[in-house]
Image (cartoon, rainbow, N blue to C red):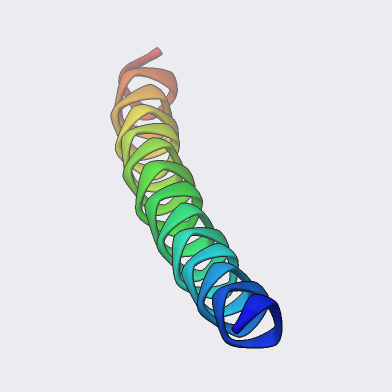
Length: 49
């Protein structure tokens, strides 16, 4: 019985870790896109000078 609960806990932990990774990935992607946009805007400004 104890073994079964341990197994369930392990699965839960694996799932939450996976979700955390995905969240972190999305967060990173979001900031990367913001940064790229900023760089492009900055390039346009630099071209005008």
